[in-house]
Length: 109
Image (tube, rainbow, N blue to C red):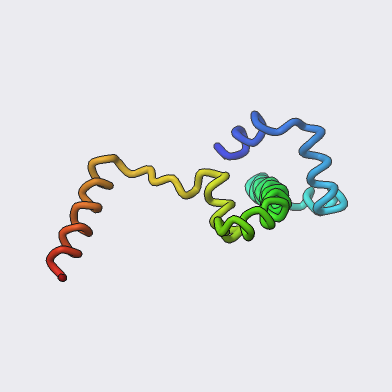
């Protein structure tokens, strides 16, 4: 239910109806679903729309990436622009992991 209220605060009603109609072509299909499923469908639709825009952006940048040898896959690009590649662990934990890996490399050689 929390997602329902979060969604209601973030999406304009007209945009939401437009999105649902573009993806599902009628609101009748949604009438038989419970609120949770409708919210999940809308969230999925919003994510897919966002992903499509980022894919178009990535495709426009692709020639530059190829010619400058800075190529990244779409998945890498998507993670970068959406911030999904950001490590949210505490700094101390990240540093400890780096130290462990560094020690493994030196102990293994």
